[in-house]
Length: 388
Image (tube, rainbow, N blue to C red):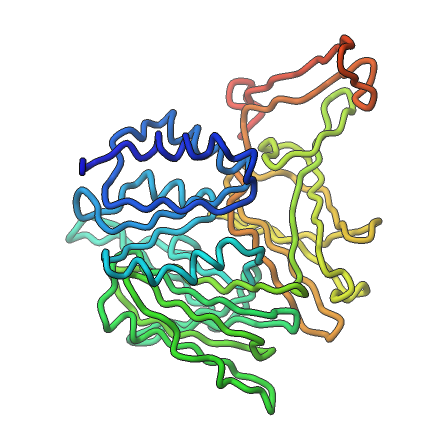
């Protein structure tokens, strides 16, 4: 077939049915880069996917060159999706990963090469050197994850609480990985006594992926070792599934100058907003413990203690950051174990703010066939100078 192909238009057409299948993952299988992904089309696809809570996942069996299309990388990152690089005869091995993606689940640990890295400039190549930050001597407040680099590998340590019914662990390299990298990824729990680890297995290894699916994982500290490769960085994630696992959703409540309150997934940068967290499995959470929400992004690390006046909702007022960020919730279970849950898709604060100022006769009495007066305000914070 053609190389490149009309990929973005195909995704846009697929998203036109999103109102019938909201909150579902989308997998794009292709062997080519895109030739129609203009900035306006990519932004439209990105906004549409985020609005309807779709993750965009790209399964690539080829590209029109050596590098992955940057538009695919952008769309996967902004929607919380992934990029898989496989050979044609490895496609059938994606079955378990696609099946897991269709289930409701929550991340309990995540480590992205693009997070927490420092720049050192190479005078010879005149390019930046990317290095992961060591956290051996401290507990990363965002991910409850320790990272330690040794000579040939990185060691990641995370915690599994008792509500995790099934645990999915994935290491995804940026490029197709050789046998040394794939076979070198190992995981091991450091469990309590009498914990059965026979169901751990060896995992599946193919393309750029190492994947483990663990049923009834041991409660406690887990460790994963990933071989070091300068030219093939990785992303690590641990995700929980099951009817009794703790999960959460997040919204933002903002108010217009008139006092009218609206709830949104895309808060206005620089505004004061109330972040509202809805937690499932309330009976598994220690009501007397401190529940915290963490905002994490490049050059951003903010922690807030949540309050509650509801059976399953916690809230706190924040100053909305200007940079994209992820939302994490941390607390304590009734058994006294720490739980951490991560919303993997980024929140992108908007600088073009549309707010509903007035609805008359009332937002609660709008009826078909009647005239309703709605006054909106539109503010571009870059132009007004209020956003800095």
